[in-house]
Length: 322
Ligand code: G3H
Ligand code: 13P
Ligand code: ZN
Image (cartoon, rainbow, N blue to C red; front, side, top):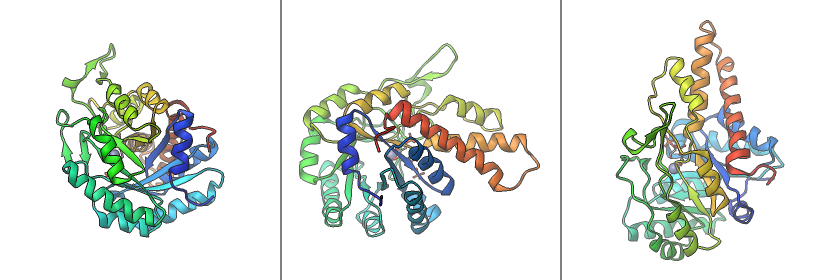
C-alpha cells in the first residue's frame, strides 16, 4: 500500500467509534517504534512532521524514512502529515514534497484571517490530492512558536465551526476543549492532587465537543495536545537524573471517550519523548561504560513501540482496523 490520505481512515474511524493516532516523527527509531506497533496490531496510523522536525532531520530524510516504513508495513494504511504548518509556503512545500495531509494552523490569527489562509491552503492541497486539517481555538502550550500560558488558552466557539468549515473547505478540524501541548499541560493551581500526590487535571470540555459535533455531523474532529504523560516515564526520568516535577497529561479514559465520539485523530508527541528519554537515562545510569548509540537507542525504540501499542489498544481503539 502506498502512502494514503486520511479521508478513508477518518470515515472508518468516525463510523467505527475509534480514533487514529497521529504520532510525531523526528528520527528513524521513532518511525520504526510507531510503525512496528501499528503493523503488528493492524492499525492505521498517521506519522506527522512539524516545522521543527523538518529543521532538525531534513524534509527528504523524513519522507524517505516514512516511505521505508510503508514498504516494511504493506498491510496498514499510513498517512504523512504536516503538523502545525504556519504559512502557505510551508504547506505548499510539503504538498509538493510527498505529504498526503497538511495542517494549516492559523488559530492564533483573527477568524477572518484564519479562514483566508486556510482556504488558500485547501485550494492548493485539493488540486494536488492532499487533505487539510485546520484549527479553531487555541491550546495552552506552544503553537506556531507562540507560547500560550496555561490559563490563557481559549476554547473553540461551537457557533463558529459550521461557517469556518463551509467557507474554508477543510477536511478535518482541530478544536480546543482543554488539551494542551507539552509535558506540563496544567499548572498545579489548575489541578487537584490524588492520594499519591499526583496532579489530577481538570476534565476536558465534552460539552464544547458535543456542541461542535451537533453543528458538524459526520465531520472528523482532531485533538492536539493529547499525551497522557505516563507517570511511569516521569518517575523513570526523575529517578535517573532528570528533573520533571509535576509533569501531567490528559487522562487516558477521557481520550478514549473522545475517540468513541467524533474525534478521529489524536495527536501524541510528548509521550514519545518521555518514553525515549526515560529509557535512555535508565540505560546510561545502568551501563555507564557503554557508548554505542545502538545500545541505548534499542530500548528507547522498544519503549516507543510498547507505548504506541498501548495507545492503539486501550486509548485509540484502532487495532484491527487497517
Ligand atoms: O505540537 C507540537 C509538536 O509536539 C511538535 O513539537 O515543534 O517541537 O517538533 P516541535
Ligand atoms: P502532546 O504535546 O500532548 O504530545 O501533543 C502533540 C501535538 O499536539 C502535536 O501536534
Ligand atoms: Zn499540536
